[in-house]
Structures are given as C-alpha cells and as structure tokens.
Length: 301
Image (cartoon, rainbow, N blue to C red; front, top):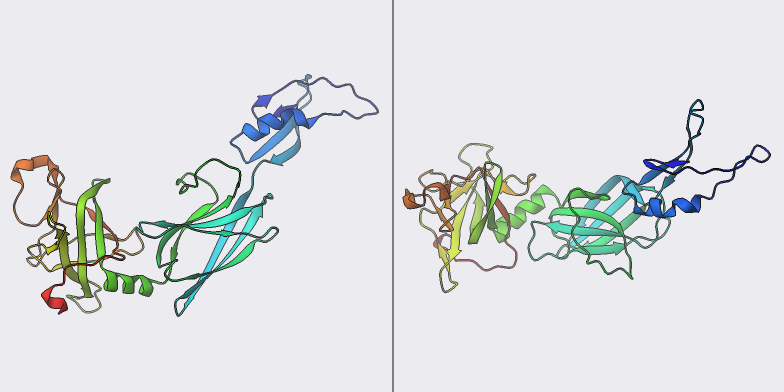
C-alpha cells in the first residue's frame, strides 16, 4: 500500500479473495500533507504485478470557477458570487480584503451550509470601488491564528475590481490621489513622506485623450498642507493596473524625479550631491485619498 510518496508495506492474508486494510493508519499522513488530493495505491511485492489506484482522497475544501456579478443602486452595492465546491466544509466565509485602499476594513460574510451562491449587500461606504482580494475560507472559532490577508501563493482567492470604471474615476476627481511609491527598474520605493494630488480634473491635450491635471501637495514641518512649485501637473491614470501613473509632468512638461535620500519629489535640476539616490520613476503608484483635507488652491475657489 502506498500514499503518493509515503510508502508503507502492509502484509495481509487473502481470505475469500478479499484483502482488508485499515486506512486510519494513513490519517496523520493525510492531515500533514500539503496536497489537496492524495492517491492511495496498491503495490505488490511481486513486481510483475503492476500497482493500481485504490482511491483518491480529498483532504481539504477548495473552490473553483468563481463568478462575480455586481450592481450599484443609489449607495447600496450588491455582489452576487457563484462558485464550484471541491470537497465539503462547514463554517465557510467569504472575505473582501481591500488592496491599496488605506482606511477601508476587510468585510467578512458567512456562507450557509450546502450553497454555492451568495448575495452580499453592503453600503458603498463600507465597500467602495477599488481592488479587492476575494477569499474563501473556513472560519475556526477556536483557532488562535490571526486572520491575515492571503498571500499571492495561497488558494481559494481571486483579485477583483469592485465598482465600475466611471465610479472609480469619480472617486479620483472628488477625493484626489495619494502618492504611495515609485517604481524604478522593477523595484518599488516608498514615497517616505506624504505627497498627494488634489483639484484633479480631466484636461486633454488632444481630442479623445483622457489626460488629467492637478496640484501636487505635501505637508510642512508643522503639518500644514503646501503646494509644490511647478504646479499644475499632468498625468494619465492606469485604473486596471494597481492605480499607477506612467508619468507626472510639471507645467514645463518635465518628468518628475525622486530623491531617496532626501525623500524629495522634484522636477528642477537639483540633488546633484545625492547622485545614485536620485531616480527617474518608471511608474508612480497612487491610491484614492479618502477622508483627508488638502490645500485649497486658488483654482478651486
């Protein structure tokens, strides 16, 4: 008898052409395995007889074929989820983990036993438009482990966009954007201090172009908002790829630079002494600026 790579020789007499095995002896191996499906093989000492599969055992619950439908009416969002259950489980939950959305909490809903379709109704305030990690899990009320955002190599999850593109665009125009990090040669570098873009509006240079314009701000040593020189700035926003900007140009059409040592965002010829600490970002990563007051520019009066 063999359990995948776990091999154990068991001698049993044959009585009336039947051989009886107690499969409970494999319970520890089944529980400790990282594989969701285990195969039990019958292997003979006489190698002239080929081994054959006795049974396949599923050791944990998985989901497949996740489908999502959503609609927004007034300020009420409805999410309909359907999926295929592989195996059985009790105390199932589905969690919505916000990605790149500071200030928004994870939402958890219990799944009734025996169903593979749920309808979730939440206010737009609790489930705003944006990127989420949708996780199916088993809730263990006696477990001691902290509930954490699943890692990208976990199972039973998909990353989804909640809300329409128009809804996400409206959030950007109303709330502005916080600059979170800069990407250079595949490395993501934290902004190090607070920078944000406010007073955003669509300002195309060519017909049909969706280019934005706004005011870049930061806070002084006393925490008061101040607008940077060389405003206003212009940019494109890639909604479908982590809310990032491929460029951030100032009023003279120069691209933004960032000094890692000084944690300074700038466009002019400066920070020469910092040498290799100055980068020209390939992308600027941003998030919607929720619940923050900004600098009131003359353009907004």
